[in-house]
Figure 1 (cartoon, rainbow, N blue to C red):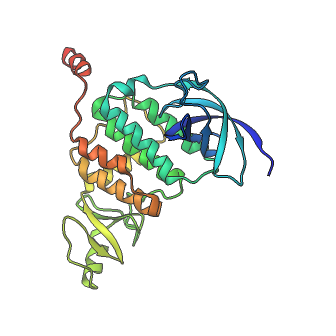
Figure 2 (cartoon, helix red, strand yellow):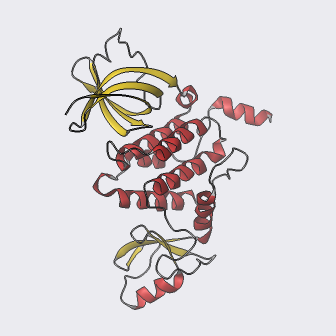
Figure 3 (cartoon, rainbow, N blue to C red):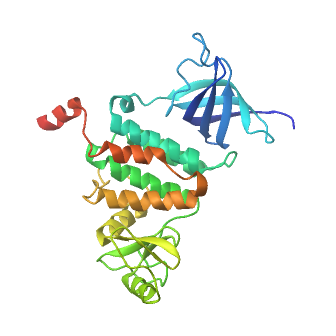
Length: 287
């Protein structure tokens, strides 16, 4: 198949060393979806790419594309936008890395998805702008938008088994069923022989299901209902952060299959409570 020269905007998701002087770069592009490209000589001191091929950079690329190959050849690249504020805050950088890993793990190559590309640009820019209390809410908003863009939007307001509205009290959440399960359906399933319920989860309807609070479901439903957000209307993350993290993580990893384990989310869990840089803390104290 003949090579086709393509020009497109893209975000750098991941880089790896290749040989002595080159790089293997994973991009998510606006026009062609995920691309893996070889940047020859990118690690040379006087490379024409300079610092262009750094994770989270927004760049414009020219590459030779062949549908019968997994690895494409990068011809040229120039920086459109960088995100220096992320480099000064470990937690913001970790969220950016998690967003990049999500798109790398959850997408296949050569499948254009401009909506998903817009979501990626939105979170990278938002992570530089929102307050420390809004960081995790923004990331959850991004995860919900990614799920919707890939065709598996979770149901957070109605029972996925019977369709009734989920009650205000605790309910259940099933990644395999696609969202919330009401108390009535859970009790019926238990009566039919499901495992005993526990805080860690159980098996009902043949799927792993976890108990969650009504507050967590309503919070995610609120984020899901927002078509766009501003810094003024994005709510801060609620106290039950671990519960919401577990819901979204299990949902995305289930639908991603064998490639769905997201190591960056494990790293975020290990970071613990957010600790803003000294500079940001000083500014907040002055306010």
